[in-house]
Amino acid sequence: MDISETLQTLYTATVEQDDGTYQITVPDREIATGTLSEGETYRVALISTSTPDTEATDTTEVTQSADHAGQQHEYDGPPVEEGEQRDVEIENLGDQGDGIAKVERGYVVIVPETSVGDRVTVEMQQVRENVAFADVVDDTLHGEV
Image (cartoon, rainbow, N blue to C red; front, top):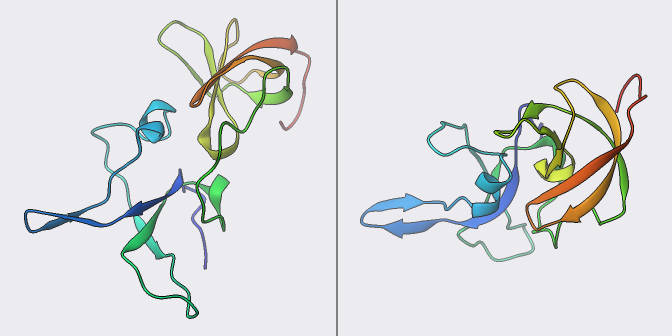
C-alpha cells in the first residue's frame, strides 16, 4: 500500500452510527497537538484492521501522517522524555512568539527564542501528554535535522 507524503496523522477509531449517519471521532490529542485543525477539511483514508485470520469488525484506521506509516496501534505516552536532547527544525511560531517544532507522530515541541527555519538542538524541560517545552542547547546546527 502506498502512503501519501501529505499524510498528517494515524490513529485507530471505530465507525459509529448516529441518526442514520456514520461517524469517526477525531481524538482530542490530534487537535491539541496541532496535527489537525477544527473546521479544516481533510482527505480521509480508511484501512481495515482485520486480516484474513481475524474476524471483520467495524474498527477502522483514519490515516493522515507519514510518521505513522505501517503502524496500526495506539501509542503509550509522548515520544520524548524530560532531559532528552533532540535536533529539531522550527516550523511555525505560536501565539506567544515561541518556536514550534514537531517530532514523531506530529508531537509538538515548544521552543522559546527561536524563529521559523531555525535548526537547533533542544533539551526537553517539561513533557506533557500532547506537548513538550524545550530549551535550546545548541543553535549551530547546519544541514538536515
